[in-house]
Length: 369
Image (tube, rainbow, N blue to C red; front, side):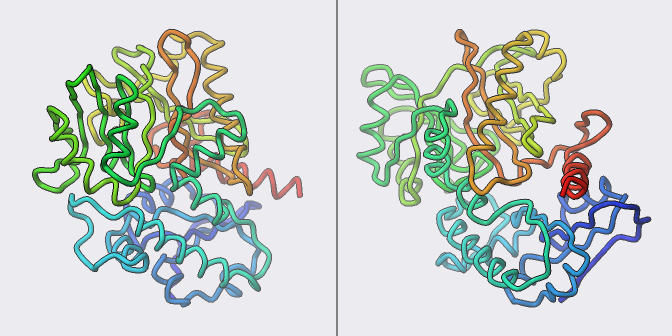
């Protein structure tokens, strides 16, 4: 086992152990931010190999924080293989079997849970069951619906005919891979009578995910794009109109920490249905957009994000929630819940970025205990 730590002064703060990658943007961002406490890192491969001495690592009763395995292509490849995928290159643009990645993650978390069964006392920031649920869009929709959190109607399809039948029932829809992330394999579909027009982050001509979505004209082209996606299972939701603010249409990533909505990242687009930053959306000014929407709508937006995170049991200390405010009604709807949705450099509230806010919450909970 390799345990790495940063040399830093230690005050009366909660130590933290992070499971993540050996390197990568997320790890670098966390280490740059959290400099007031001992931080020790182990890797997902260490967990998979059973190579972590948890008795030593958790002796001072730290918090245990899990970071995304996808910061390391080799770890992604290993999870895919664990989940039954044929070994192959990861880190390219090819469409991954996200269902098998999810199965591999379940195995990794099961091994972690078993290793921690007799470990010294510590606090988990993200329970395994909750992590797996938020990486499952169908399960997420069920959790949100049970809790009364407004979210688009979600239907499930595993064949092209079933998917087309659902899509034929409304004028515009979104198709998402059940266990997908980062908008991989997402299709925005418009239908007018027998005419079909779609925009897709998956290019059926190359079999790759793309950062410049392709346009699909007609039912035949849509069918070609759907074919590899439905093998993984897809969820289909109505394409709700987003409010206009900040110079375009906008939705919001809201990071909820210890039950409070803290950091809000507006994602503004023009001429595209996809609001992911890596697909061309730009960061909006939260204060300016808040003024445009009004205090009541902003309050409802934050409260809805908080309600979404609280709906999961057992609860996670933090999560990133994607919320749209519907044009016309100004009603918020939760689109996604992201287990690792706190990677937002440069956004601070009360002098704290997301990482420092998470650690401050851990300190407060430790004192309260």
